[in-house]
Length: 416
Image (cartoon, rainbow, N blue to C red):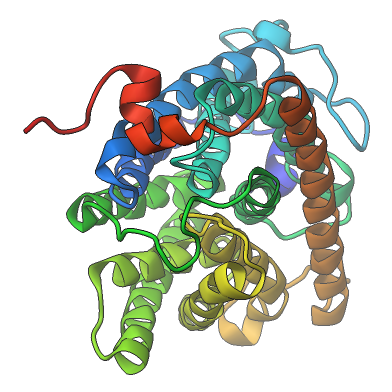
């Protein structure tokens, strides 16, 4: 996302109104992905007695992440520091004035754009543990994870940290958002344990139409997610949006065909899951590739994620309930690796600079994936383990049977 532009904010060009207007709009689009996009996408996939609990998670995580980002998260990610973490000079946006710039943007606008990313990333993990995790631990886990996992990795990749110094290609959130959330979701789901009846005796999604609406909101919001990551209203933003849309379109068609061949008929849930897989896969590459690369990522992301869904649930026997790792995690990881090839100028990519090459860039991408996955997994295991010992994670059988909507929030998603 930031490459050398945001890292050299102090040396950047003067304020630009067009860039600022675009990033203000992009910030709204990225927040729209969580509220209401992700809330509806996930809400339709669970049983009706748990739909409000999933939506409540999205709302509370949005509020909590925003406050933590202001208090200390932004500073840990973007205030200089060392190779591993930012400092504390920008807590509560101290030292950030109305005239402070990041590139051509007011720093307050850059803060808001990054805050929207900080909101959606822990919210993605909701899909790993719905219908069985207590509300209190969800809130505490999400807050701790944002500070211990998300903020440092954001600094590594975008804030001047060690992976940025090595030239990692991570235009938007493939590593910082999807690989972190996907890996952590898998660990959390494994440590929490499966839903009752997993994997064979589970009810289907209660409202595929709601899921489709949520997926459409995510698709639209992804224009801001990837296009806004150019941090300017320019051709780079335009191409990022173009390849984002094409990857999603190709992946949705590919997933539909895979279901048609395997099960005899395509489903709404499958088609929109394919779209999301294509969006996640193109994300880290969106600023570096051309249309040919988008098609490759759409097909490969759909294929890999389609078979990963079955592998995680029926081979690994991990109840990552809404396929956060299989779709978001693996999609982001795949795109992070393939960009080393697809950025080649022969495919209308941006290339690797004067001294780079496919092989050297690929090794950098592999290193980044390994480091991000390892830290996400280790830190998540520690946080979940501590919460399990001190608070307990899992709702009681009676609470699960009653439904988390009524048990924890005193409301129902539907009245008869």
